[in-house]
Image (cartoon, rainbow, N blue to C red; front, side):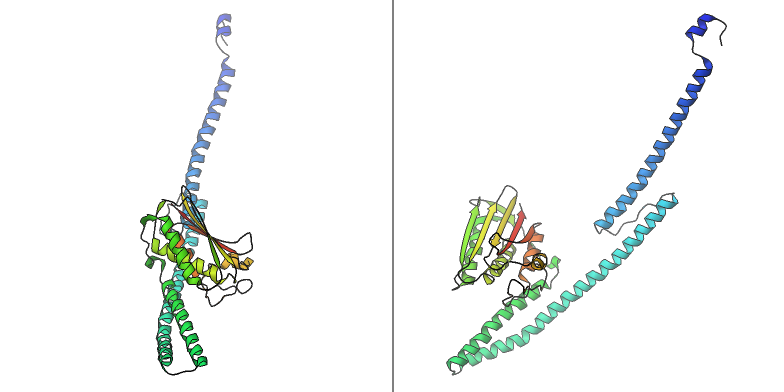
Length: 319
């Protein structure tokens, strides 16, 4: 210590000061090393998160950067093995789906040939002399042949890939689309005693960008399904609402509604429900096509049961 009392009073104690300085230096070194190591770990964890996100999005054509840490490299290698297995699985699934669609399309085309022969011979028989019973039988054959032709056309269309189903966006008025669907549904119902109740909201003068032909076909598939599952004296509620950012169509029939299984699988290809909705000659293709069109419009299709117990299908198209 200093000999002078003044210096001892004004200047700090050397031993205590040196100990404090050493402690501060140790804290600074520990903080600096910890921060740098944490930042390195953060970068490596970010690499793992990036790989996981790419796999989640099924973007499997990427090459990750390995680190100098053995444990992280082991995790990255495991994720790459997962990516390769997923890639192989997706390729196999894509090949299987492609093969299945090609087989469905080929089978549909093959069915057309004998169906054309049956219809042609039935038409020839209708021109020959016949009694009333024979005339009814021929009419049954022609009607059934017409329905089979419709199913074959849908099969051929559904056998195409989604890329082949082109969408052409054009600006158009919403109200004429709703009116055309309503008129075509009334023509489809014919003499069947079914009321169609239209409820529209904010459609007057509204325009949107959509593919009118595809959206019309999708809505018609839903409407015809509703008509087929509505009993005599029943009602179909057709609601069309245009909000600031959405176009919403809600079709509700007065049939028996969907079962719990139907609510989950009604839009799957070839699904037919026998528990609560009679198939009535349908083969599970209408809602499948409707769902595909809605997805092409970046929209959503929801299947529910209405408040009255009938089946309800809601189509939401973002504007």
